[in-house]
Structures are given as structure tokens and as C-alpha cells.
Length: 281
Image 1 (cartoon, one colour):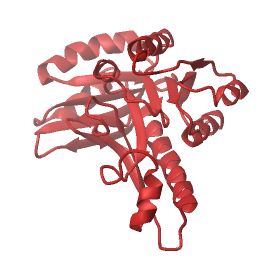
Image 2 (cartoon, helix red, strand yellow):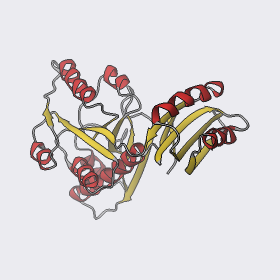
Image 3 (cartoon, one colour):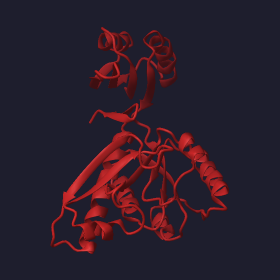
Image 4 (cartoon, one colour):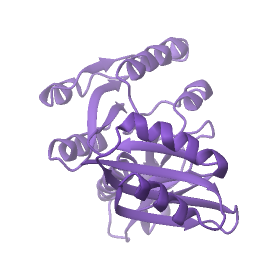
């Protein structure tokens, strides 16, 4: 039996769970996992259902779901669990998140199909080659940024990428590219913002004696580093920690937070709720 994941959100009303369950039952769909959430502030209902079905093809299910969802004003998506998520990773000169993602992917821990790595530096072309992943070096400057982003988008489109991971890609994306990648681009950064901006944030943090080292993974939007948050974490620090200690702790935290965010997104567990997210872990 083929296994699928149905995600949807819609205005809350009585009988939604019953209606979805009945729709699947009529098509001999067997529910394997289900989670739901009703937002009391927005009045929206969110649900993720994983189910097995042998009676209908993927296309037939999508067609029938279109008709079913219309009266409920549902925003929905259907995914086959057998299909890993086509992914493009973007990186600059810090490779800890890239290296971590590649290892987890190769170890079978992430449901990804990593199609390409894009970078504005050449530093990791050998790492990409060791995993047999195409590496695209695209330089970026203030004068060439529009052309660079056009080439990046060509690669993303050619690979059919459903997910773009900014694994410490240190270039600000244009508003046009942010809109193009809306809901399918994930960024990672340290959680010192907005206190410690610019270069060498860990030096600034050490100078101020911070007690927490954190990281945030979020969806990319035109508002810099303000997209819907997917995951965050912190590690405690004290007066004995050097700048090098803080930097190492930060890199570890960033890698773990990004990996969790990518995992949940690739398993279709994240639903966007305005400026926030609903995550069915």
C-alpha cells in the first residue's frame, strides 16, 4: 500500500476530523498517524494525517481532495512518503551546518534528495565531490547580485527543488528571491540578534559576558531574519568560556537546530500559521 501525508488548514468548524476520516474511510485509507491543532486566536484548524491507501493513485487522490476541500476553504497539500524531498543547499565559508546535513543525509537520517550545493566561495567543492553532489560556484557582489540570483534560481528550478537550505549562506537574498522561495527556504543564524549585529558576534557576546548561546532556524522572508520560526535551542555559558569555546558551542547548536528544522520540514510536519508555525512532531 502506498503511504501519503495530507496537510491542511482551514477555518475551524464542527466535524472536520470526522469529515477527513470519512473521506479516507470511503477510499479504504488506513490512518497511520494523525495530529491536529485549533488556534483560538486566528480561528484556524490545522491537521496532518499520514495514511496508507491502495485503491487510488496519487493523482486520483489529489483530484478527489480538490473537490472535497473546496466547501471547507482548505489550504492543503498531499505528499507521497516514498519520495524524498528534492533539496538544494546554499553555503558560504562556514561549513559546519553543511557538513552536518550531508552526514545525516548520507546516514539515512534525513528524507532528502540533495540535488546541488550552491556557494559564493569555492571552499567546499571537494566536500561536495566526496558526496557526489554537483557544486555550483556563483560569485556575488553588489553589481552582480541580480545576475547571480538569476543563475541560482535557474539551478533551483532545474533541480525541481522543494526545499532550499541556507546553511550559513552569508548573502542577503533580494525581496524577489525571498518571494519566489516563500515557504520552502530555511535559514539558520545565531540567536544574538538583534543585540550583536555585524561581524564577529561571538566576540561581542564574550565581551558582554553572555550566559546563553543560541540558534534559530526559520523560513526566509523579505524581512531579514524575521520569518516564521521553526526551531530554536540554547546552550549555557559562563565566565570561563573563551571566544573559541563560545564559537564552537554556537556552531554545534546551529547544526542541531538546522537539522531538526530540515527534518521536520522534509517530513511535512511544519504548517505556516501567519508569522508563526504549527509543528506536528
